[in-house]
Amino acid sequence: MPLLATATGNAFAHIAYLAWCPDTGEAAAIDPYSIDLVLEMARANRLTVTRIINTHEHWDHAGRNAQLRDATGAEILAPKAAAGVIETVDRMLVDGDEIVIGTGCRLRVIEMPGHTMTHIGLLGENEDGDEPFLLCGDTLFGAGVGNVGYGGHGPTLFATVERLRRMLDPRTRLYPGHDYLARNLAFTLRHEPGNRAARALLDTAGPTPRFTTMAEEEDINLFFRLDRPAVRAAFGETEREARFLVIRRARDLW
Ligand SMILES: [Fe+2]
Image (tube, rainbow, N blue to C red; front, side, top):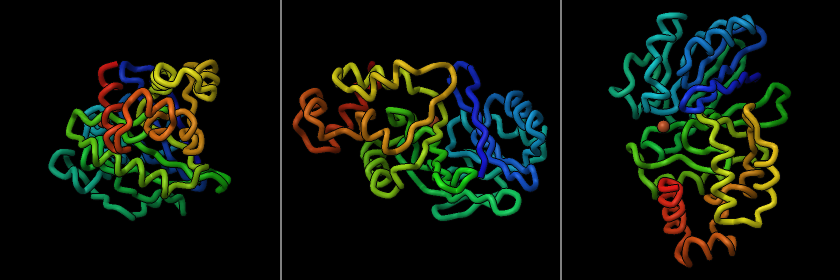
């Protein structure tokens, strides 16, 4: 399934996504916020937005659903667990559900709570069918993970990240809701200054989002590198989960 992604340049560093079917031109907008930009991206590529899909209930992901629905007539799909918080949902999503866009473009729903307790991800394959991808909302970011201060739960996020590391093909490319890569790489380098992969990626970071894979995250993401000597030295010789939570707090305060 082809995926269009573009940095919005807005204050939240959102990334706008359209997952679309090349046969029919139908498209799903994932967590649309910069509505004008989403509509322009659809228009420029001759696509019709027929679905809005939310990964979680936060207002900067789901708060402009109605505006895009009014402009397009698209139906709204959102996590079942967020029912009542996200308004006028046409289809509620649970783990394992499949969303078909056009003729056979498929996204699979994965529940991945932690950033909020309703959070889902959308698993698909690139256009050539040789690389999986995960639209991961605010659960995973380039070189980081989501915060837990707005309806989340740290131990649950830890469990989700550990499960995703076990479950996902290392080639899986991550498409997060915000472009925090450069800032997160700087955080990695603050605590692991000898991390060459993080340094190399930071040196090439620019305004166009760079999407990492799960394999790359193993090299640059402190939340994936809990057992590395530098990370243990910086954050304590505790259990993995405790170290994860200490890193999360350090990132909040940084
Ligand atoms: Fe969020």
